[in-house]
Length: 269
View 1 (cartoon, rainbow, N blue to C red):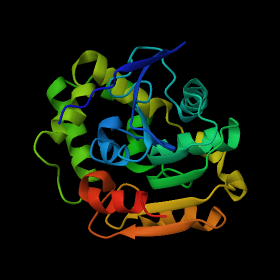
View 2 (view 1 turned 45 degrees about the horizontal axis):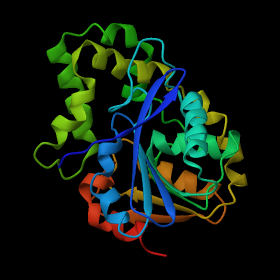
View 3 (view 1 turned 90 degrees about the vertical axis):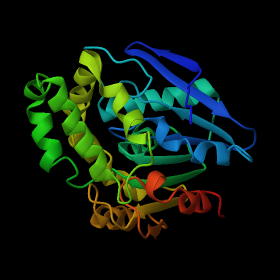
View 4 (view 1 turned 30 degrees about the vertical axis):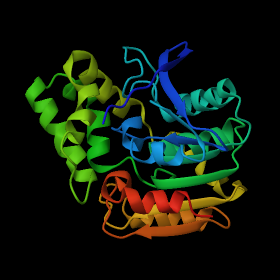
C-alpha cells in the first residue's frame, strides 16, 4: 500500500514528517529502529475507524529529514516527542511505542513532563543491556561502517531487518524499509542512529520506572530475537500494575508477524 505523511513539524535539527487520521480519542503510534511509521500501515487505518491516530517518522528516519550533525539520540528524540504532543494539542493521549520508540516515550513521560492516558509498549527498549552485541559493534565503529560500499551496506541492513521478523515480510515490505537507508545520505543516517543511541540515555530513566502511574500494557513477540523475553519480564517487574501479554508466533516486528492479533489487543479494554 502507499504510505505518505503529509504534514511537517519543523525543529532546529530538521523537519519531522507526520500525519493524523480519523476522529475520536487520540492515540499516538511510535516506531523504532531501523523502521519508520510505515510499520503501522496496517494498524493505523484500522484504529482510525474509531480513534484519531497520529503517526510520525522520528527525525533521521523514514521521510523525516536526514542530515549531518543531527542528534538522533534518545534524549533528543524524547524532547522532540514531548514538543510534538504540544504541537498537536494533546494533553494526555494513548501512546503505543515499539522498539526504541518505547524509550522515547518513557523519556518523554518520566523526564520531559509528557502525560499519557494509557501506555502500550510493544517489544520496546525500556532498560537493561539492550545496547550490546551487534548494536554495540556498529555504534563503536560507525565511521568504518559509513564507508562500506553500497552493496555491502544494503546487505547488512537487509539481514538485520530480516532477523527482526519471525514469519518473513510480505512482498514489497522489505524494500520499503530499506528505501530511507539507501544512497549516501541514507547510509550516513543509518549509522548516525547507532552512533547516537547510547544505552546511558535509557539508564537515565530506568530507575524511575517505578513511578510510571499510567495504565501500562506490555506486548511482546514470543519469538523476538532482538529483544528477547527477559526484557519484557524486566519491564513488567519494574512498572507497577503493568500487564504483560505474549504474542505466539511473532518476532520483534509483531506488526508484521501478527497484525490482526496486535490490533485486537490495541482495541480491547
